Image (cartoon, rainbow, N blue to C red; front, side):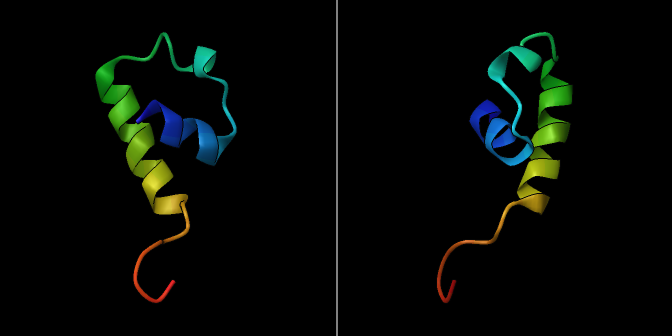
Length: 42
């Protein structure tokens, strides 16, 4: 989860250490929405 957030938003892991699980989940959902879709036909 943290790796996905870091890649999409260009944040170092240290920026996420203080986040609680709920915050990480919210940012992860945002990261998934912004990331290019991968899979069949991509």
